[in-house]
Length: 267
Length: 171
Image (tube, rainbow over all chains, first blue to last red; front, side, top):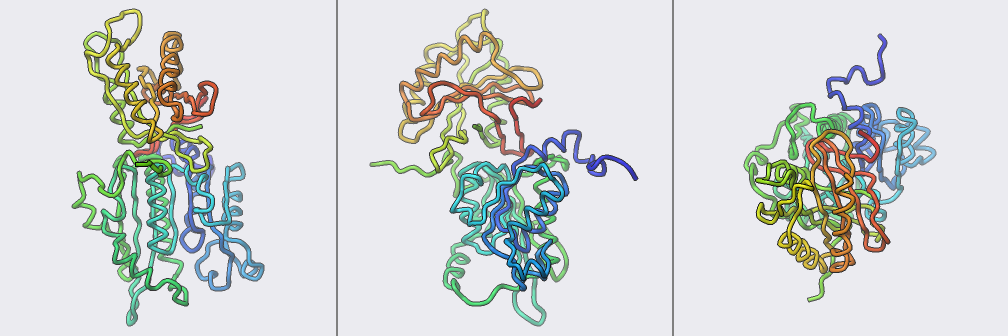
């Protein structure tokens, strides 16, 4: 089989290669979800990246961190380094702005993104990232998974697209005061949450699919909102019914005119 | 430097500008935008609103594609003045009905940049500028608050579905 590098994805559209390479994409969090995301973005042809992660590879990451090896755990390789290695291995001419810190410490590079994919652990982290994306006119795609209960354990997750002018994660009922308060109460609890590789893969692949649709519009759906619920026990991804009820409603949480850094007005 | 707007706002602008006018050959509008940087480095101007110009605010001048009259200019100056607190400036926008990258015509060069010093005089702390759209591209110029003149932007990003990136020098 011969052909150019992207000949098998030409159905994405005549100008899809340019559209993908022109798009500045951000990935916040390069762990179980983010490592999948970066790998797929690099394969499909993204050339401009803004990535953030301040963590290192540990033994407990090796069950799910794509690209990590036992040597990385021993060497305490930064996750950022693995992501850069993945990108440059596939796209040697890529422009990668990489920061080994929380995005809040260096927000300006994030503001350059056209699409940001959030692979963060907390509801508070998601809320802050969505706020920043709204204020800087960035499509925000959120992914996350969790495991609840026992006998049997239940795997759930979500992929959400929150776009400027559309419903936000509060409108969609995903971010609630109760969830944020509960998380605040549990802050500092010892122990990591259960995480496994295959749900992360499903969620990350769906997020990358949404990012490709946002750049190429190959489905012709012109989607600017999405809330997909993952049922890891049934192996299904279904649109949330909540989103259907928001059709035609303006988001009351973000005004179209409140963009850029907040300003203080003396009264 | 980048100019960025949502897909909804872009669609609103294009839908307004492509409407035929009773006598003018093209339409003009005003966008409102502000600097979107936390570091003070004016990397992007984020556009928030669009103001259409009513038909009767144009002057009938067959020598140019569109000439706006004193009422439209007064509205723009008022918008510039209102933006002093919020740091919002005025971007003059019109559309050239062809495909590919576009630029200022000789008439545009003669007529439009001359508006910006007026906006700056009223509101010197905000970015003011010019956007010229084509049917599938766009070019922009911004006079940043601390700059001594207008500069062409590197890209205009439309955050819609799909994302459109109008990169300078790329058709």
